[in-house]
Length: 130
Image (cartoon, rainbow, N blue to C red; front, top):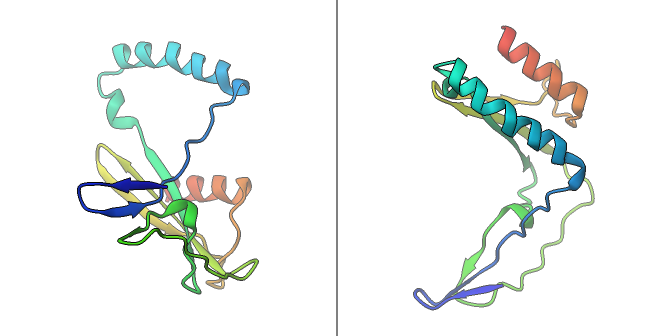
């Protein structure tokens, strides 16, 4: 919990995610690989995609871990929510050429579904090959 003297508002903030040692080698390989690619491929920076997905709960629930709440009072708010509310997952990407997406994770009948590794891979493959 933090307090801003300038505007007299409280705000809550997410915590940082820890870097795990099990990914150290992958990070090192990238650090060794990237400078060579930048030197060899002139438009390497134009081939980089930054992507993310977000979940939108259809009942109006907001995940408190992904949200900042600003208020004049200390935001000690409790919100009741169902255990597994229906949600829609949306994916987007940014690159040198602009924005790609949004892509809504839905099945053939138009119903929302849970995203797993296989569905995510299928979305990426279909999105870039169509």
